[in-house]
Length: 117
Image 1 (cartoon, rainbow, N blue to C red):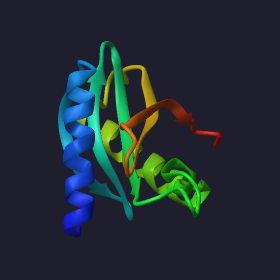
Image 2: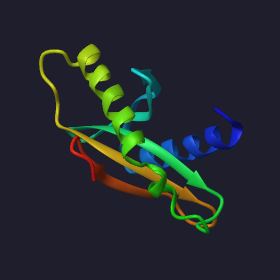
Image 3: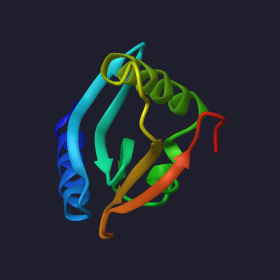
Image 4: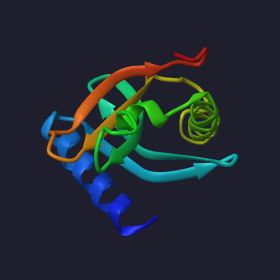
């Protein structure tokens, strides 16, 4: 991960902690996919993608999470669940933290699902 990516991810984690998320993992990799942040939001286990851009000229950061990226995140989440919750899968969701210059971080809860957006 490059320095800009690490800074954006650290900012996202602080933002999520401010929202009372309990961070349990970062940069989980499996099956060719990576989950930037895994956290509990009350009873929901959240798989969170962090996207950042310097400007919105080419679109908003969350728009970069296309179906191919969603599929890789979903596969990695399935691997995480198999390893860590093999008998009882908790309620889960896929979120995106969108970070762009001169704007506060934005959380998109339920940004996508197993069937896509």
